[in-house]
Image (cartoon, rainbow, N blue to C red):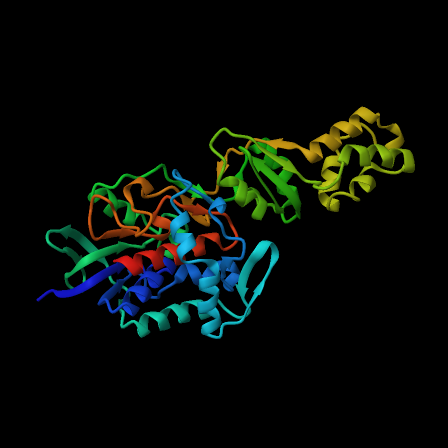
Length: 391
């Protein structure tokens, strides 16, 4: 005989465990399924193993999606401070890093253990290493698995999206959504490093490993954080942030001397150092290896030999270096996936599909994508809480 539940949640990641725990605490009989052998695999690798679990500045403006208003309800009803309260209640020590980012003092394993404990307190049954097969809906949902079929009044899709396939990411939630008539928006990698053509790489590859403060701008968005040159192109927080706003063929603009009038500084250095080397003057603004690369393009080896226009031109480039990425490193290196289940198909107050009563979608499976820095985890907690309160 098929086992019966009130709610089946597919996906034991951040959103799925939160949803299951909240629903279980409400007295619902919950089954949490995942094809992975351990829960919270993406949590475990996040933040260098310390899990950047939320951000103090989390607000709807930090999220992208076809409907920028959709995330407001969930974020307002379960805030970053609500999640911090849970973390504190479980005795997990944490600290704030730059830009409001919160990390565990110890290990991301503490966050997974906390969520497992919350699920256990709610009586949630968890089946790991379980492959889900056909899903149908009559009076109730019927979910086929390799451990036998189960039925439920409500089904929650919490399997994430395509980012980091080596961690088991698939398009499962999107396939199920289509099966039940839900629309998908355009899907593409986000928070991902840029790649470049051979000409640009000829400069970047010798500088692999150089990191610097940068302001990256793309399509009206601007982020000032670190940038990293790699043997494939550009990475680092500023670049990852800009990538979410980039489309094929677009340019990005980098200010690699933010806070400096680079043109004015170089002309002033010529007056002060006449016979000095351009690399030395550039070294006051840039890391030495990058300074050397830019100095190599100047038409002279001494500041005194350089016309002001050449120095001004270089300074303007430092404050507005325009580059055209050839692409990105794709889902393998993307922190998240942009796009997903169209939010027009969901009720923002409950995360339930408007046309399919009892079907819910949460977390990264939905067309809501946050900035880098704990925002996507907060969306997982908030959307999972909302679905858990309503399923």
